[in-house]
Every structure is written in structure tokens, then in C-alpha cells.
Amino acid sequence: TRSLHSCSFSPKLAHLPSARSLHRRGCVGHLPRVCCVVSMDKVKPVVKAADEEEELVDPLDTLREKCRAEGKCASFGEKLQECNDRVNSRSQTLETCEEELFDFLHCVDHCASKDIFKHLK
Image 1 (tube, rainbow, N blue to C red):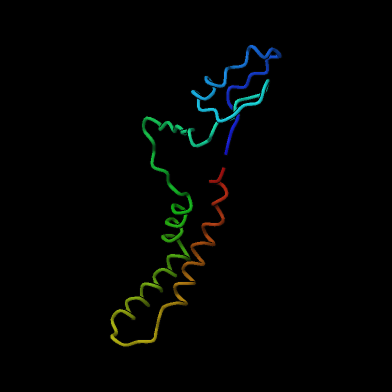
Image 2: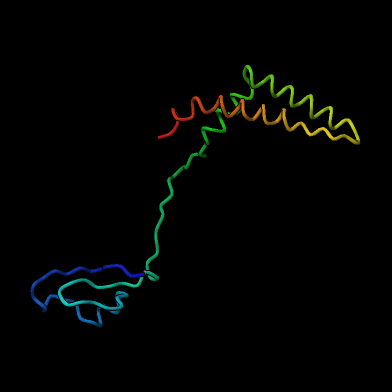
């Protein structure tokens, strides 16, 4: 993992830095009239944060919330809630509400998929 650093393409050898000065700058080797090779373990990336970063909001989550509350998906949500209430009220049951859950999730994803590409860059 090495990179090029301090490139010097001068035709005169006198303009090249000495091996000692290259070593002080972190160079681990060099070729005459070419570039200094720097070890990547000495490179530290710098990330500058914005003054006030806004909280990123996933547009898919927003669309799903909208779809859950509207029209056909809301009726599937009500059926799922009724099933959950029925299952939770019993101590022993084999019912799992799997069909209602899949219908609800399919409806929400289908509704959100219509508009998601408008929000992507």
C-alpha cells in the first residue's frame, strides 16, 4: 500500500531531494527523476463536518408511513390489528396472522414503490 508523493520531473538530478530529506517526509523509497513513494500507514484522512448537519431522512420510510395511513393499505392494517388482538387475547392458539402481515407489507411496498424513484438522485 504505497502512493506517489513529492513528484519531481526535473531533468536535472540536482533538483531531486536528498534521500535524507525524503526519509524525513515519510518516503520509503524513490526512483531518480520520478517520484517519492510514501507508505500509506502515515496517511491520515481528514473529514470536515458541516457546521449544522441535518438529520438524514430515508424517503422510503416517509413513503411507507404515508401508504400505511391511506386507502387500501389502511384496511389491510386494520385487518392485521384485528388478527393481532384476537391472537393476543387467547392463551393457546395456532393462528399467526402471517397472511394478514404479508398482505399489509405487500400493499405498503407496492404503494411506496410507485413514488420512490422520484426521490432518488
